[in-house]
Image 1 (cartoon, rainbow, N blue to C red):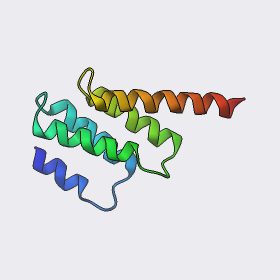
Image 2 (image 1 turned 180 degrees about the horizontal axis):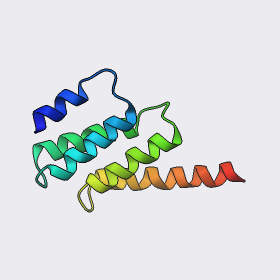
Image 3 (image 1 turned 120 degrees about the horizontal axis):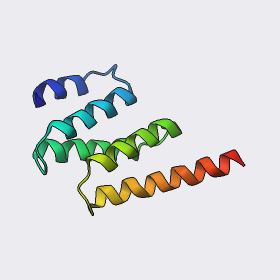
Image 4 (image 1 turned 180 degrees about the vertical axis):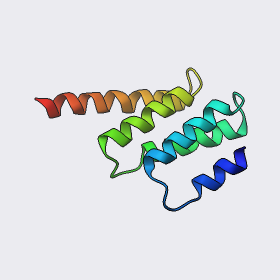
Length: 95
């Protein structure tokens, strides 16, 4: 299954949203603390930090990372920080 997911991720025409969804599926089906789960988490961190994403894409990436990350992990802290930043940005933009 992991190799099939990797094939999907290597397609150049995959959207950010599809990539995030695929990585989240990989997290959900992988054993906890497995190599596959760690790899998917690393990829979600990379996406979340990518410049030029829309607020919606950033939000999706941060939510997926938060759900895929272990409790009290650095990745979960990063995701929580990003979610907080995005919420503040949305609040300021509405004013």
